[in-house]
Image (cartoon, rainbow, N blue to C red; front, side):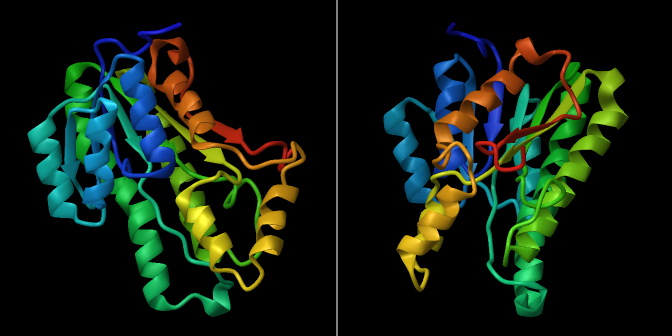
Length: 246
């Protein structure tokens, strides 16, 4: 099946790499007009070679920039919130700076985007909001992922609340909760570990399916949630973790 997103406009945050990039490309392949945004100018520029014509610098941590983007873009059919960062460590190792940076990007950044873009979506008659959360948070826990888990648990709460408040006004809001995915973020944590081989083994072994997931697999779920096939789906937490939390 092709053309599942024909005629739709989709804005993607964190589109320069990893899951965000894979999703921007998947949306475009299915016929959407994609606005790919992020902070990595070089990574975004590379998307032009892959068929995405509209790219824009956007830091979800900058409230004024988010508001300006919403005014410029207007109504979108799909809002895909993927921008995120991670810090390792327990609560005792989480500095105030780490807390502020991760919460501000992952949770408050999602809040800024939804609050800014939702009014035009409502005026246009509805749309699909998809937030990238994680199984780490309110689904399960992992060692030394304290502030990341807190931020992603908040994203799930935000998702369910928005879904509940606007279900009768044409808005669907869902969250995708990946397990271990082969992204630059994960690759960097493996490479910088004291024992990279042991770290990779940890990531792989916690999925009973025997491997990490791929960004393209997450993107495929996002296409479903973005399109009309999922018109009866809102307020859900789609777990994609290779059986980790089964």
